[in-house]
Length: 133
Image 1 (spheres, rainbow, N blue to C red):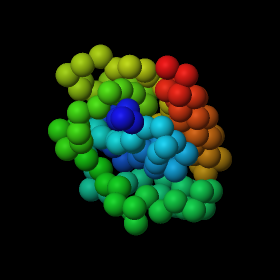
Image 2 (image 1 turned 90 degrees about the horizontal axis):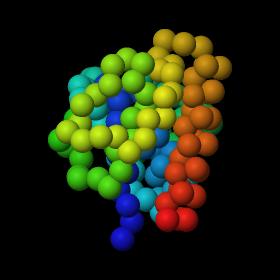
Image 3 (image 1 turned 120 degrees about the vertical axis):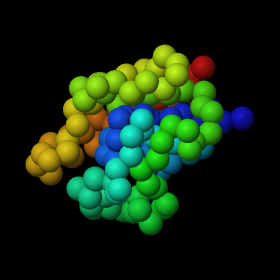
Image 4 (image 1 turned 90 degrees about the vertical axis):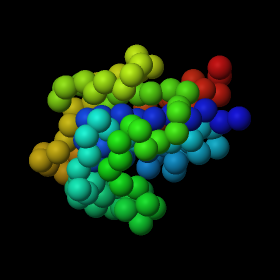
């Protein structure tokens, strides 16, 4: 049975959405990916949507991703915080990991791409660690 992994940040509109999309794209053979937040936004960060399409050919909105609350996803085996620089969300349990990623919202495409690359690297590390467990 595959592990269920949730990527959590406060608004579930940018970093956690990128992690969910890359988890599905790069590691769906090893774990199921979900994202959620303690608050929601009316839409995902449009820079994230545009750059994920440009870099990986992934259309997060077309794939049905949307900003959702923690209560809307299944119970997971692992919960990963994207970074608490905007206030750490409370999810009713301790996080399994905190990736400490800067929020690229409102920053340049170059800074966005750095964060996307960091998330890709962390997804691959997570995949390897689950395989080796």
